[in-house]
Structures are given as structure tokens and as C-alpha cells.
Length: 308
Ligand code: TA6
Image (cartoon, rainbow, N blue to C red; front, top):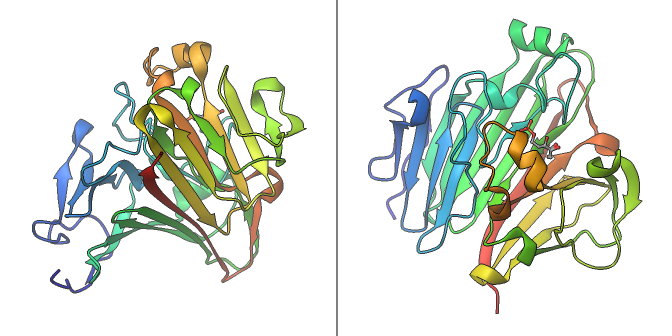
């Protein structure tokens, strides 16, 4: 595999920042620019809008990420599916967009390279400005970097750098939507005996039992104080999706089920059986505090294996 030099570019979009035959900057739905990455190992799409990974499939396999057929693709609105980047807060906030503003802002390209092992590494960047300080209501200066590695596994690293003179607290998450055969037939392992807030039951704090998570109704749980990897066992597609992580103490598990699916305008009424979110981050009890000049990087790695 020819080693491609590191291409570095700061500022807006630069069509020259491509790797011929491997990574090109195309125009996606809604006219939004997106990288289309195609290698012998895997294919992926990454929008500059929200640094949003919308598609990932190891070669010869089904897509790993769910994408709603009703998703919006327009400035100021989140894409429904793939991997929304959540920062600086998780969930609703009075008079502010739910899940923060990082997922609806235009990120820039910091670097793009192909490594000797064939993996493609794309780094997207978002910097604080007057708008984000107004949206957050805080005078913080920061830089986000989202390092996306496309190969037989999908690697994502969300780095938060505090460039201000004061510490700040924030929540962050990679809100990954996974494609599954039928949510009623899958199980999620790894969170046994973990504590969680149950959003489907008034945010009551509960404890997961010693068994896997199974889905029989709306499920919306924020597990805290857990560094565990998760596995999504999908017998319908004879596939296990492994969700490994580092420097993340929270995992959110979500399926909207019938009623919630019907009230989301950018989500098909009949799409809920085909997806589950297993989200990696630091939220609620695990809210981060980043010192001046400090950095925090949350890492996750998604890969598939056959389910015997
Ligand atoms: O991660 C689960 C959750 O917080 C759910 O409560 C639901 O709101 C979901 O995120 C999607 O949020 P969004 O703002 O993208 O509609």
C-alpha cells in the first residue's frame, strides 16, 4: 500500500486534501460536503457538518451504522444516524439545542493520511468562537479534534483541548447508531451490574442486573462509572458488533421504540426495529473538568465478528 504523505491544511475546505482513489471530498445530500473513503479494507462517509461519520462498512460486510431515511442534511440541524458528536452538554438544555452544538457546526479538515497498514486517518477540527461562547453562555476557549480511523475497524477519538485560562466542565459523547437485524432479537452485553439513569422512567437511578440488556420497550439508559466495552449480539445477521472504549466512564443505550419513533420528524415510524444506540462518552456523574491547557480524549473502536 503506497504510503501517502500527511496532507495538512487548516481553515476551510480544500478540495486538494484528498487521497486519489482512496479519499475524496464529494457533495452529499443537502449539498453538504462529505469525505467518501474507499479502501480494500472498508468504506466510510464523513460529513464536515458535525464531523459526522454517517457510514461505515468493512469490505464485504453489511453497513455497521444505522442512518435514517428521513434524516435532515442541512446546516443547523443534526444528521439522524451514524455518529453525532455531542459537546459540550448531553441531552436537553433550556433554550439551547439538545446535545450541544458541535454536531451542527461546520468542522474543518486538519489532516488526512493513509497509514502503511492501509487505514485512513482523517482529523477534523472545531474551534471556539464568539458564536459558540454565546451558545454555551460561557467564555471558554477550546479546540475539538475528531480523529477518525477507517479500516477493518472504525476508530474514533474525540479530543477536547482547553485553550482558556480557566478550567471548564463539559459533557461529551460519540452518539453511535448501530444497524441491527431486529432490536427485539439482539442483546447488549458489558453493562451487567452497572448503575444507570433510566430516562424512560423519570431518570430514576437503577442498577443493571447480571444479565444482558434486551429490548421490549423504549429503552433510554445512561450508564455511569463504567469503563466496560460492550458487545451487540445480533443473531438475525449472525454478527457481533464490539464497541471498545478508553477514557470514557459513561455508556448510553437507546432505542426509541414505537411512540418516540412516531414523534421524531427525521426518523421513520418503522425504523426503530433496525437500530440501537450504544454511545461512548462522559456525561452526568462523569462530566469532565478540563484544566487550562489540558486535553481529554475519549476513544472508541468499533469492529464486527461472526456470531456463531
Ligand atoms: O442518547 C439518547 C438520547 O438522549 C435520547 O433521549 C434521544 O433524545 C436521543 O438521544 C436523540 O436525541 P436527538 O437530540 O438527536 O433527537
